[in-house]
Length: 260
Image (cartoon, rainbow, N blue to C red):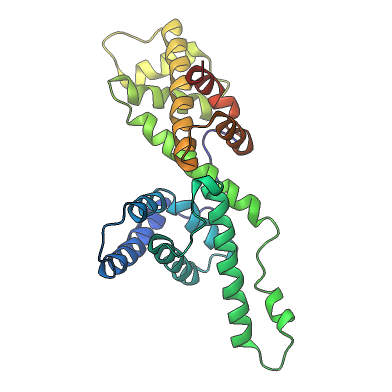
């Protein structure tokens, strides 16, 4: 897994955000209309769902073979039921949030497939009807890939928005190294000097230091994103998740620094 987090056959990010904004507006309004009390737990769940709605929706699109209409419908149903408290298993003490989400989504898709199979049945065997709607065999791997991409995207955005004048530079330098891994520090210093035109040209030594800091900062930010998704700072849980997601090499130094 590379730090750019690119996925094959991914939907257009702008179009995805637009669809999610429209869907979110609907289920948030419905929840508000039926809520008579301020429940902190529900508010926390809603914030968590808002944070990770993109990988959830991408996964639905994948399992449903890019059927956006059905993905919209199932995502809205999942979101409403989730923030309403119908899913009592969404508790960090009972396991990882992403594992819970994956199970809940798969159950919803299976139920949808069964119902559609019944609706379509015209004297045919139901099992034959369901075969054409079955989730792809690699759906579990696809969900993990969607989750990875979201965490990476958030870490990249946080790096670019880092406080101080060096935030954008750190992002630019690290992205340049990811996109052109064979580029030397000297070449990068020359290219960025030409591109950014700073008061003083970048040096090879200075660029090495910036790149090192960029890697460290990215690891810290990615670790924060993983921690937020787990809702725990427990070292064994974080280490296990980082290794499963393929982020251990990026975040090990940051995690070690926290637990010294």
